[in-house]
Image 1 (spheres, rainbow over the protein chains, first blue to last red):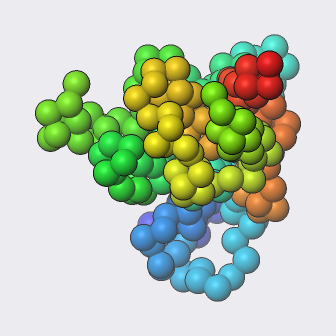
Image 2 (cartoon, rainbow over the protein chains, first blue to last red; image 1 turned 180 degrees about the vertical axis):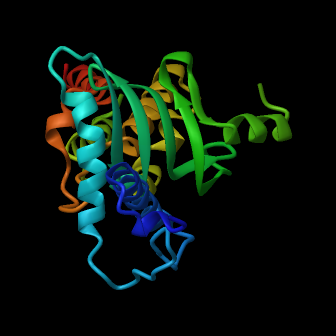
Length: 142
Length: 87
């Protein structure tokens, strides 16, 4: 079988469905991507994509809601920062975030708001890596 | 702290707790002239900014996800600052 999306193998069908849903949700959230397509290239602009979001949620949620499990892998949507993130959590607190949302860079008064992918490790004081670090290095700030 | 500054901070924190303030509005409303450079308030600024950035919303209904939000460290930090300002 040379086409993943047309495979009759149950494992191939399932993995295609999950990968396709993740791909569509991340394209939908990317403010710079105006052409949302499936993995096979089919255009989805102007269509209802909520079923793909539901697929992502049903893939991730069981990891975090299993009884007695303190660690979880969660997708979170950050409307007030126009973005989202994939987080490893412990008791609902983020311990590692792979995020893409707005944040301010370059100092409080003179800085500007940008929207870039970054990594947060709250317990280690790592925020908006590597952009803050690069900016501080460029400005000669500790 | 003047009553006016206290009111501004209360408004910001209450709005952040309810997910009613976005980053741009926070930067406009924060009383920079009065508070910038004071270590305690610089820390408060960073914590509120972080909480606003990471307030979880439901992707489809666009409403705040209270179930997750109220369990987070960010939410509890905002509650702490709210209680400090009130006292």
